[in-house]
Length: 177
Length: 343
Image (cartoon, helix red, strand yellow):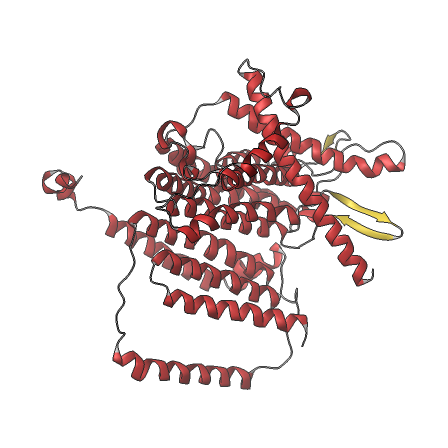
């Protein structure tokens, strides 16, 4: 077993353990921190697959920026410990067998239709020029569609967050603060 | 190079770099106290050793032997983890910073850098963006209103200024065409008209440098952007509840981050270790490292100078400056650089 494979399995184990811990924890901040661990371990997997740029972006965007906003929100709301429930019977009866079946199916399809040769570190393009070519030339349409989608999401958030004009004028809304 | 020699070289390099960095952190604190003291017509530390030079050692011993209080109302796992996160990620980024060209010992060429990653710049950005959690979690887990406010301010400020920081670096990336810090420095060798060095700051990246410097000051929570620890309103901000070595870890993280920022500014805008070389071969081998260290010293002095000069911003001024001035400016710099390079 090569060092490469050992590292790949180790990062995978961290990933799965973090994901399970994310569900098992009752306090939101612990769940958020496990999600950061999952993101960081995923970045490690990308690195091992030779996608250095994707690994770095994974850490900067997901583990760095987006999760900081999650933690920020949890801190700001001071969300408490969530209540334990017995769990739903539907999830036990259908969810877990369905999930197992789905992952087996996906694994079977992927293993059937892909070669067995491993990707070496540095096999994918890592210099800014090639990435720029790919993003802004080869895959320009998906890139632009994604940016429009994000713009719509931002506008939606602004619309939802703005108070209606009647409450801004005073009256009942002022009593709150 | 045989594998055992490679491992030996890596271990020696890591140890040397870590010791130098920690010493530099300790003596930056000394320098700051001394320089700010003189700026304010005081002497600064004078009692421990000549010119107070042993003051960092005395401080270190004091931090180690002070009582390590843990307030009863904190969330303990994160309260202990937060200073560790802050200091570990602050010290990590030094691993990809190159100090000079490769030196040759007994026929083996050894680069003056712990590890040469070809996405070095992105790695530093990633590591610094993870370092925010140290401050944010310290503020939250302390269970104290001042700490929480400090932590919130720090995370909001760092997320806001990280965008301008990243965009101000893209101009340099366009010009050098590589994420590797070594390539970026090598692209800045040579001179214009025989005497002006071909550093990026003289190569059309002055506005980029300005944006980087402003954003970097905000990222390291230094005056005039030190609102997360504004003592007049927040006691000590996110580290109010910390004492002894845990407090010292936040201090070390802040100064290590300052040094990283100075290293990046030197590498990206001021030509790294490029500088006049003269004299016998041994001097020629040492001079690049000397130029690199001298430039970093210049940036650290600038940090202290600004601290001794400027008052603190108000929080709304900080946010308005970041989003309404710095972000458009760095975007315009990016567009102008792209057009100039495409021409």
